Image (cartoon, rainbow, N blue to C red; front, side, top):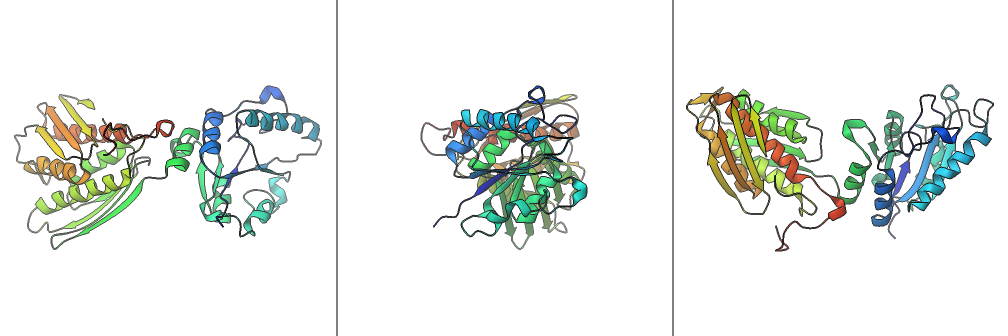
Length: 358
């Protein structure tokens, strides 16, 4: 029997905006969070999660927060959501104050006992959705995952996308007699980078891909730099291209295409297509032999290897007088092209091809 997955969803700050006094005790304070109706309805229509509301309501039932001011608004919230196709299967509300140190209060797990001790539920593949670190702590305490609204740009649209289509995180290890490479890519990241290739300028260029492409990028390359830079640069490109290709999965819902970017004296264009066929057009001339420790002859070779491994068309053109700006502009433009091309639309989750294959 298939175990039931659950979305443990916070109320204030997650479903409805939280006022400064942190009490929704009147209709005048009520406002729903942007995107909650459309995206939570999408989740309910396309996925099989059980919806459980988990909310701290400090002092509910005391003179400072009488129940007669709480329930009319709360019931209206539930009725409005249900009218939009979102029905909660259960609601768990705790009224303790923080200083009570009650195990019932989030991030304590006391309210969730019936779910945690029940083999019918798949807690490991369930999620807590909230807006505070206490929600993240609750997820950790019960052994599930968490999405925190407002953290690193997380919103309801992104939550719906990730729940429906999955996270696009891939690792690749490539080991030869010449290089030992580990790469991890999260296409839906925030631009966090951990890059070390032994070539400072190359690290700087690769960081542009992560930062400007809004993807988390880990690249650790140990190459035979005692020979020269060739294998380090080429093999890093091959492993990175493979990692991006694997992270894209079946490519459903992606934009597929992607960008033109000026940088001071330079104008750079990187047009790409994740069409499943490698091809490189390179129109960029460099007069210096090296920039930093990186031979300029390896720029073309890097992008050719990347194109081959990722099975994508790359059309690169750059003009300008400053060599550093020119290649940095190319890498930044590649990053923006990647960001554009890998963007997913779960509301149009089709393969972007008339052939039916990419």
